[in-house]
Length: 220
Ligand SMILES: CC(C)(COP(=O)(O)OP(=O)(O)OC[C@H]1O[C@@H](n2cnc3c(N)ncnc32)[C@H](O)[C@@H]1OP(=O)(O)O)[C@@H](O)C(=O)NCCC(=O)NCCS
Image (cartoon, rainbow, N blue to C red):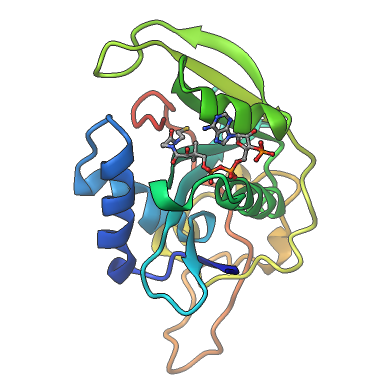
């Protein structure tokens, strides 16, 4: 059966995402954590659907921001990844990760990071097969007391040609000086756009928001 992948579309996806993640990951997330990621970076989250089904069987949730000390580092971050048990070993997680990374690269990412439990052999094998390397071991990183590995993948940013989505307020109000060089800043409005009724809608590549510590909201 073929699998269809689509980006997060809105709150109606949230119950499905929460069900998939809560079922499989031990780290407890509150709804605000999901919304933190999904509202700011909806274009980086993907769901996997068996053909003809409205129930997703896999999900990835991500964000993108600048490194707090080195603003040349435009960093994608994979916060949550889960595939329903009945649908594993079919390449769904690999496809989800690849789609998110591709979208991050089109938004200027030059590295992608994540954390996973030190003994999660399936996740380690998946990410290492995609070229991620172990950057460091984080002692008792998770609430269950387990250590994590932080994995990192260095990537080349892609031209932002096809990365269009409507702006959100936080994008518009970000100082343009915070945008990375790879972004097409010519198409970013300098001021809040006119109301849709009186001006054509402008679409542009989404600049990553300013950095906040990955450890504030961890993924696994
Ligand atoms: C990890 C997880 C997302 C993998 O999903 P999946 O759709 O089964 O993975 P894929 O079919 O895309 O597998 C891709 C690669 O991952 C690795 N992999 C996946 N499952 C594996 C397993 N049980 N043991 C070892 N390696 C595994 C393999 O390298 C595989 O490549 P191959 O099929 O060529 O051997 C899934 O097992 C899961 O949801 N686990 C619980 C949640 C979790 O641990 N999330 C990751 C947190 S960072």
